[in-house]
Every structure is written in structure tokens, then in C-alpha cells.
Length: 103
View 1 (cartoon, rainbow, N blue to C red):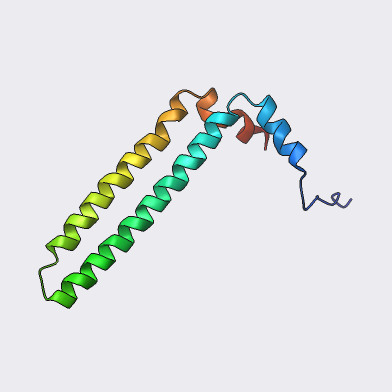
View 2: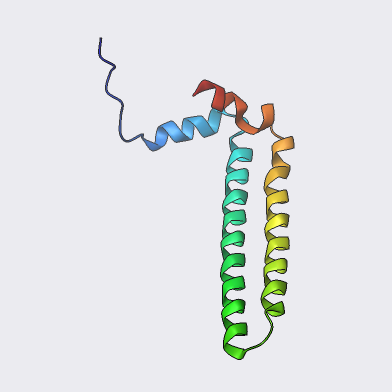
């Protein structure tokens, strides 16, 4: 017996229903946004460190400036990671475990 075909596009109504009837949906969206912010902060940190390294090499200066920029960026990324993890404690079942179990 063949499996029925799966839809390739879900309607917005499906996503709205999941949002409306899932009490952890808002928390999950907040955690997703915080995770994207953490990724962006880490990417920005890497770019800042590379830029500082290139500037230090071009100026023939020690790379301590680059290390300081990388440390500051790492601290920012760690703070964003901590903020992303915080809402999970408030969510029922660890922030969407019901939805993950249903999938």
C-alpha cells in the first residue's frame, strides 16, 4: 500500500490554528527570534574579529585589538544565548514539547 501524497504547501490557516490552539506558541516564537538574534550576534562577532585582525595586520600592530573585539562579541553572543534560553522555563512542557511529541 502506497502512502498518500503529502501536501507541498500548507495554508496560513494551518499555521494560525497551530498558533491559536497551542498555549506555548508565543513562547516558541520568542525563543526562535532569540535564537536568530544569537546567530546574528555570533556572525557579527566573527566578522568583527576578522576585520580587526585585518586592520591590525595592515597597520602592523599587535592583534590585541582583534582579541578584545572578539571577546566583546563573545560576551554579547553569550548574553543573547542566555536570553534565548530563559523563556523556556516559563513554557508548559519545556516550551512546545507537546507540539514536538505530536509531530
